[in-house]
Image 1 (tube, rainbow, N blue to C red):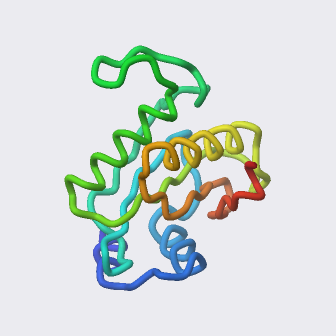
Image 2: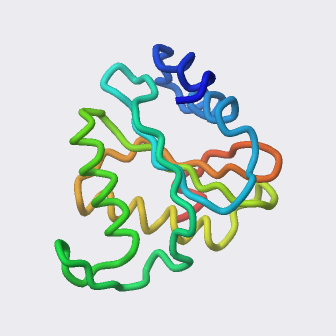
Length: 148
């Protein structure tokens, strides 16, 4: 973990604003298009690991054949993997951060991925704590009103 994330490990981030501020400290602003898969422990603190995923697919609803899951959407695959990692690392919930160059406005891609991941989390019973966008000037939380 970075120095900033190490200093956050014992800070309870039970309010969404606190979590957003922590992400702002960690990630600051977008450098490239990637997704961050993060976890919260049972105390409400940032857990390990922090996983950057570059080159994630453009279309969350694209159907793919996966050996262990069958024919499912990209979002289903990502959320299934996030849920498994959450369990394996003994964390309590998942936080997704969509990093991309651009403004703070919610883009169609932000909307599509956030909606698909929230839907997959519900189907798979994965505890999705929150989703955020890291943009060119900072961090913005994605609320259900932004993508439903």
